[in-house]
Picture (spheres, helix red, strand yellow):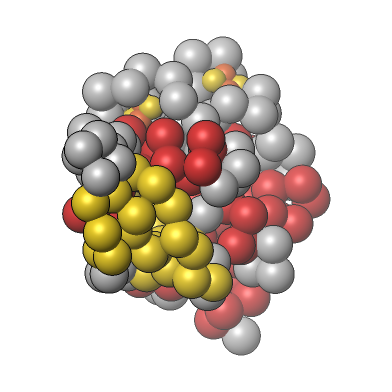
Length: 159
Ligand code: FES
Ligand code: FES
């Protein structure tokens, strides 16, 4: 809900990680900027800033989105989940257990997107995993450990 307007800022209410928050936004603010600068949720990272790398991935109504491309005002009636809201999901631990933790810049986006994958496709194939994670880039390493972490969560879901 948008409550009031000033000349430059609007007070908006958004739902993040299950909690309603009121923040000051300008019309051009991205969701990534608001999460990081207004709410102190710094897990999502600003890297490319143009939708190419996935470092800023958050869930909007359960779907992975590049928050650098979402305006905060577009997120007002949506349910936002960030990496901070996934601490009870099995995916962060799977990344640790499989040594899939990387530089800290790309890892939060990988975890959020991987969580979305196993939620949407609990029986995902190797090809689906590869295609799904192709929206997240790491310039320094391979994707083998990430793939194994995702598969370990999928296997537990299928038991
Ligand atoms: S910072 Fe958003 S996709 Fe790269
Ligand atoms: S970009 Fe994160 S480890 Fe390479």
